[in-house]
Image: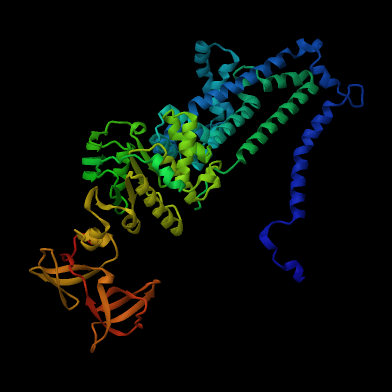
Length: 273
Length: 358
């Protein structure tokens, strides 16, 4: 009795509890992945084999999968376009607000977090007329969807960069560089961007993950991307759709693992003396 | 040995600095109000004052991090008010840690040399000498997060000095450090400054720091310099009650003044102040001596605290606390009746009630 009621040292859950919780969570996450993998390995005639995987790269099926490859191509084009848009527009704005207009920080945060509260369908209704103009100017090639995706990734990219900005004293670093003789372009290239490296990388990777998983906007604006193509293909060929879903999921996990590794890097500054 | 050779490489003749009628206006608020300040070549001047007095603004105006609304800031007689920060030839150490987090210590120190397009071998040599000068020659490969706060500020100092700037600007560089490290680094800054002979402007709100290291201390208040002088002058001959109150500890006691003599604590003492009648007198604790009471005594001991080499004893005189300081060998128990003897040669007074009393 006494042993049971004695306080546990350190206040941490026991090893057993930790293992159980992590085990349950792991199983819950693994079930769909394992099921998907199992499904793709089912042979049409019964038993297991790699025929559906091999069919995907069979030259004979090229016509059948043309739309799918187009979707993948578009998504792979959209991902860097969206990242570029985010890096060119959002990051300089955030740096400027941090250095020169700190009072606008709350407003910028509000604007950047807004897209997360707007349902995709409402976004499309608003974007449809905008896109009739965009199509007039830039044509209707796939990359133009990056403008809409730029809005979609704002909340994620903003948080990633902002947490990095908060960890460093950007104003002092900039002033130190200036007093040491650096021009503004040099300050940005040699001091600010390297100091924000972690945040920028995390923002880019998470933007890529968002773009690769996006369906609603592309579908409702009548564009082809990976997800819309997957839906199309799944109607006639569920195996291929599941194979590609599985691959894109694993790719997204890999990206998140990269963020994790980068984020777990060295701390930015120590405040003890 | 090493630091001496490093000093010879990094030293250069000091430059003179002048603030002439410098005004800095932020909307309605005047951060600098016709500031006048001359710093001699190689001189170490501390700007001392409460927060918001304009001392940091003055330093930043000299660095070029703030533009001045009017007036001129000159270095060696040349007006630099319009020169951008990165061409001003100043070395600056900031209050908060300012090392570039993605660079090693050596890269940090070399940064200013890189900006001046110094070739790599010379850069390495100067950076190593500069790190040697601050006593961190062995830590060149570390990153900022691997250093203690004191070490980070030393690197920041090495980085500021490596370009052999005309003026060294120190913006409360010690305020984020522990008391012990603070004193160490403070003395080291003074040693390096004297070795290099570099003109230095040091901003602080800590009077001990200012008095300990500076050739001259300028006490600032509301954007102006209230008094500038050697630490000794400020301490023993404060020009105003604000200075008397801000620099060192003072007792503020009522007295009656007439014709250059003030009556306080039952004694008549000389004063230079022209005030007459009811006045407030500023007396340092060490200028008041405690004596065992002869008869009923002037006051009663309220408390006494030990400070190592001396004791501070607070004596209640007619309900007012008077702080005195005396050797630790003497000791007076609480409740003891004592007499007080004022040994000040001259008393600073102000009209009563003191308009400047804080």
